[in-house]
Image (cartoon, rainbow, N blue to C red):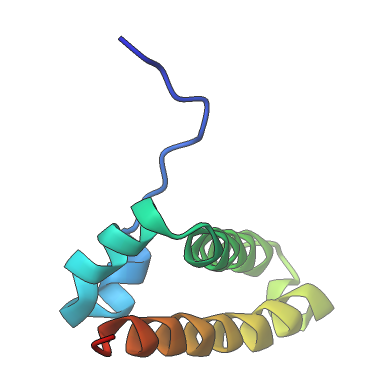
Length: 89
């Protein structure tokens, strides 16, 4: 039995954002290191945004504004990657 030291990623946020591409997302996560890195960054940004928003002055923090800018940019990257991966070779 082999064990992996790579943390298991919860893809639910990404699949929920791109619901028609669940199978492709899972396949790319297994096969493509670049896609996996973009998804990891996206999930970390979403988690960080939630954390900062929960602070008493959350909506007034620069970090919240930064993550609210970063998340849509990462979503565009993911969408572009998915579009490219859907195209036949």
